[in-house]
Image (cartoon, rainbow, N blue to C red; front, side, top):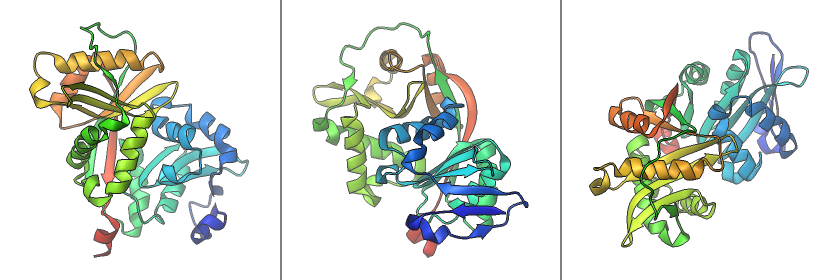
Length: 305
């Protein structure tokens, strides 16, 4: 029997779910469990960088996480799985039963935008999750690439720097465009205030890197998640007129050298169908590590229609 234990913040989950007659417990994780959870996630840093960085930035309990962290334990209290269930649902498990248990808990979350993880784990997670009749809007297969020292030396980029808050209006439309291309939803239309705050916070954290010329954005990249072991990049963009003549390689090489001063490796996801981008990142020195799956769910009002 799977026991879902909660506190008053989540009484709607206060029930029991049958699961292969094995006893495991799923709890909402509180900040007191932070050290234990980080130690669990550190076993596979390239695959858990998003959750680890979020916990280090915000703690286990914070509205900035846009979801709730759950832990799955055996009867001796040992963690078998950790999941963030919310706008983005992410999971890390060491047993099939933990994956199933966390998927059953995730069924209760009505505002999930996407589920992301390694292809096989997401397929199994979705098998349990979709048993309640949930439908997906879009599914994307992506390749996880990683880069570490040594990297090829290229001509330096003197004006590569962290963006400032004054450049939010330059960065935000480009980021929205990239999000729309990937998910089919423009965050400037569905959540303009929240999107603006998230972009500004990333700038204030020093995680948005840019190259500008005469007040025009030429290159942008966001360090979405960062730990001492791994930095995870998204939102990489180069202006159309600067994509030739090796400019992209120069910009990326310069950024990688800056980031590797503070982290051991850098990773990013590339759509499986985007052969041009895959070739570009291989030229930058990235290597394939795993196949990922991202499942996008209908927005709440769409699911109710």
